[in-house]
Length: 173
Image (spheres, rainbow, N blue to C red):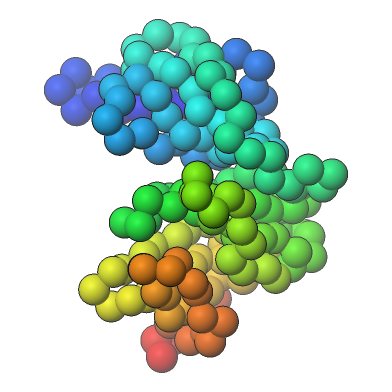
């Protein structure tokens, strides 16, 4: 199921995706008004939805992602380099091991593993000007900073714990 909010109408529109179970993200495709990239089930798919109908249809599977796992597709974002970044998490949510993966996809480079070893991919932000990538692992309560090269999409594995949201004291490094 996908939803959108109309500011002008102060109304939420939702659609069930025919043939899909669990949508973790939806991102509009540039140059279209009714096509979206979605993290759906264990794949990246393109759907067609007019934004108001109660159903949306799958146009094509872009690539399978976490086949053979019990993972669920969760968060996704599109960076300025045009790549689609998405992450999965264990179906056990925060009770699972740190075995989630962050993937990138582009038509020219296909599907690639960017990072591994998180519990849950819940927030992804790319800042071109700073050449940084910020990742929120919702189960460890940490926001982690990585160096990022927007021209190559490479993420440096050197991490800096920016914020620890451990519920007691928030520590900024």
